Image (tube, rainbow, N blue to C red):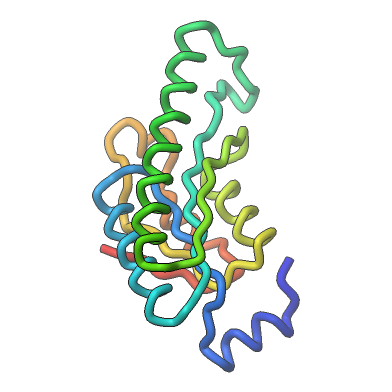
Length: 159
């Protein structure tokens, strides 16, 4: 957990040395990624690009993945890796210090992103307003709202 001293220092200086952008492959998250890249480029911050892929769950218990569900999950992870890598390459072209990671978790998407941000000492999280909609949103809830409500650092929401 970030110390109060670190949080106060960031607030006083207005410095964001470590910025995290959470993506999901949607148009809104791609806009958030472009905004994060522009921001990092302008202030010399380090960028982390993450996409959280929750493992399928049922009634609060991890599901033993059958072959079809395993294939679907593996495909989702592979797609996420491609999406994250595309953003990392874009940031590298701008000369940024950047890392990318797909976070596999049985926790909630929000909790996974927030834990990563806290462990990495992130000063600012950038997310899009809405990601994937429809049934996925119904199952997962609003990630951006969860991040805003529970983050221990500043959050920038990109429309």
